[in-house]
Structures are given as C-alpha cells and as structure tokens.
Image 1 (cartoon, rainbow, N blue to C red):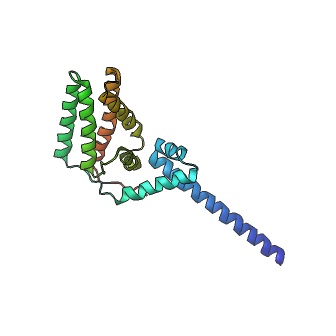
Image 2: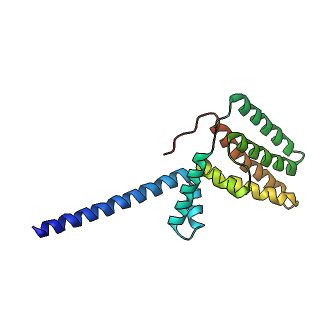
Image 3: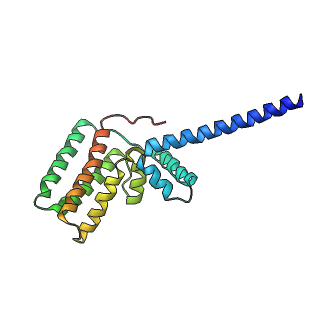
Length: 183
C-alpha cells in the first residue's frame, strides 16, 4: 500500500514538473512570437533569460495601459501625403529629408497614442506591436544622429529613409484597424 502512495506521489510531482515546464515554454514562445527579433535583444541585454522575459512582460503591461488607437482614413491620407512630400525633398536636401522623416514618424507615433518622450522608451513601447521593424528604426535613428554632424553619406541617408519608411508604413497600416487582443 505504501509503495502505491509513493508511486502516486512521484507521478504527481513529475506531472507538476511537466506542467510547469510546458507553461514556461508556452510563455516563452508567446513572447518570441510577439516581440520577434526584439525578444533575443532583450534577453541578451539582461543577466538572465528570466530577467529579459520579465522586462518584456513589463513592456506588455505598460503597452496595455496606453491608448493606442486607429487613425481615421482622412488622417492616414494626410500622413501618406506628408511622407510623399518628405521623400520628394530627399532629392535636393537629403539630410533635411531624413530629419523630417524622423519628426514625421515621431508625430505619427504620438497620433496613434504612443508616448514620444525619450528614444529608448519609444523603442520599448513600439517593441510590443512593432518588434520586427525596430531594427529599421534603430538604423534610421543612428544615421539621423550622424547626419546632424554631417557624418552620414548620401547612401546612408537614402538607407535611413528606407528604414524610416518601414516603421512609418507599419504604423500607418496598423492604424486602420482596432487593436488586436494579443493574449
């Protein structure tokens, strides 16, 4: 009789361990899917995987408290026209166009409901829904910074415009539908 009790206890402990591992794995998979490449960046930037994942969950909580809203069609059209104007300016004034692209992306973020104070916080807030385009934003931001001191080549400035456009289009495109429940 006591052997059966021991076997049942061992089975229950193993079952509890299996459920715990499954839950951790599922939570990790969900974070990877939601954050894309930003998941690895966050985990590598911390002392442990657990600390990185905790930060990503904190980002989700902060993001959920934000009022991210869709844009009405006339406003989307307005921003699309502004982007076209900025791109046209690139031909004659590439540095100025890159600076304008940065301002336009930041303005669009604000219009959607993202806080726009502080570049690092912008990255964290955007990472929840736009983790796959953050590398574009980082690259464009770096070139924009170098162009302020005239250290960016025209080709780098062209690349920055392409990078800004990736995030801009995603912000604009995602603005035409209600926020999805991501779990």
